[in-house]
Amino acid sequence: MAVVDGRIWPPYEAFYIHGMLFNAQSAFRSIVRISRAFDNLPENAMEDGLERSLTQAILNDLQNIIVHGAALSRYFWPVRKGHGERGAHLRGSLNIDEENPLYSRDLRNAIEHFDERLDRYLSEGIVGVVIPEYVGPKPTDDGVPGHLFRAFFTDVGVFRLLDIDHEMEPIVTEIIRVKELLEEADGNGGRLPNA
Image 1: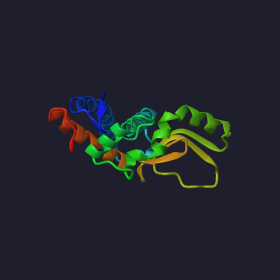
Image 2: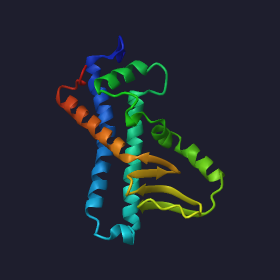
Image 3: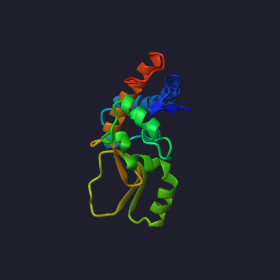
Image 4: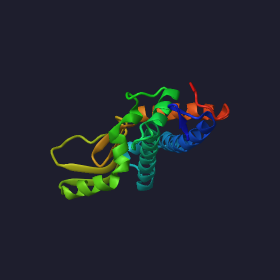
């Protein structure tokens, strides 16, 4: 049994550390790629519009961060019954509570039920301007209905996926914090902090 008396059995902590590290490190690689992409933009790139391939790469990396953030969330707040003690142990070890940005149900549902949300989104009928992919300042409301399938608003740091907005800075900051704690735990014999 992995959990004994509400705690992960110490020799098994390394398995959870490695499982979560996969998600945190993959998200971190996306964070680094996005940062480099923006650092290397020409001076007037946002006014001139980004190349389609760069727009797609940035949006793909943002969506990857959301995917792995949702996966980390499931470790801390398991969906199925019978796994709550494991989640509580991991939250306690990594100083995580329900104020944490990874707790957001919108974050998890954006990915876990994306196919169903896409069905509903399209079944409501789309009228107005449709922009499948966009990276740039948040558009102003000019009265014409607009739909952004995937967008990143650079001026406010918001990633939009099917009309649901996700503030990226708190999510990114928390993923980096968790990644660093997990890497330290991995280097310390595969033991969780505060265990």
